[in-house]
Image (cartoon, rainbow, N blue to C red; front, side, top):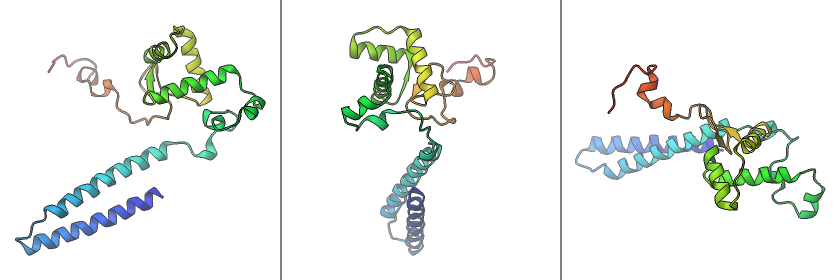
Length: 182
């Protein structure tokens, strides 16, 4: 569906550019309104292309492991059915942890997770135990490791092309030889 919408926007963009060329050829006619429309179409097309790229990176529904329950599987179920499922208290804690990360923007570092847990519950979690829980959640597909970012977790699978702070640091790009600062 998104690719059809992208094709439609491309078609409309081409038509707007043709109108712009015709107006420009006439001379003496302002093209500012059509130029504004072209800019809007270009911005829309870029946003849609980015969304399509993100969608392509998500695993298909059929590829999802149906042996592991996720929060989406059980959120809308009545308590009677939940009681029949083989979910432990630990599973529900995993779901709550995932929900918390999602509510905080979808990506959090281990340190920020510890802080947010404290702020919400006034409990101090053991870093090692929480780290082990997060590792198990990654193994189950409830969370994802963020590439090139140690101790950072995401509720959605990050793209491999996400820039990290070290990708743009001149001192690390050439092995540390560049020591000038700006």
